[in-house]
Length: 185
Image 1: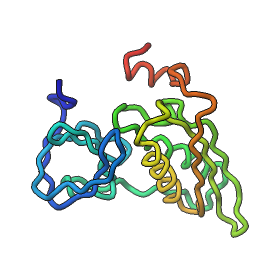
Image 2 (image 1 turned 120 degrees about the vertical axis):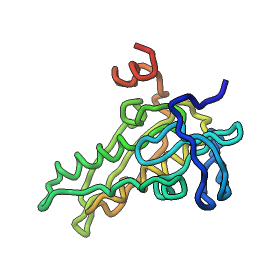
Image 3 (image 1 turned 90 degrees about the vertical axis):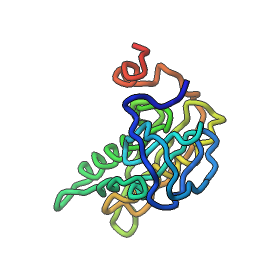
Image 4 (image 1 turned 60 degrees about the vertical axis):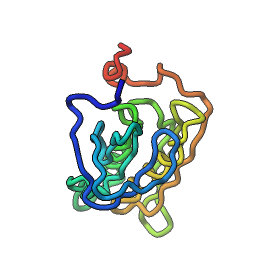
């Protein structure tokens, strides 16, 4: 059985492209001209199937697939702390496990998210999150993605993302929508 389907979109890379091997988390470069299938395009990043392997391609590399990069987050003029917090949660919902079509918030992987004012007047975001499996090679990749997406938000000066494993993640932490998406409800 292959991890792509009739709904997967074929592609040919237009240039050399950095990617991450799923689930090992190893960084590789896929060469220009490489053909494959886009199996998941959620949250601005892409999971692709190439020669029997899955790879994660960041949204910043979308042009290599012939796609547009994701838009940057925006805040309304005169944004309040509540506005910033809302955009923080929106950004967290753009982070996906490359093998599961559910965002990390609905998967129940975000245990804590705290917004505080920095000395310079901007914001700091502290996140505690976990993984569906403690030994997942994609852990640091997801942590880096969460951090970088939060730091794209105007007025967010720093995001600290801590990977924790207590309490251990379980399927009961998933939202009903997530359970429906993966066929558990």
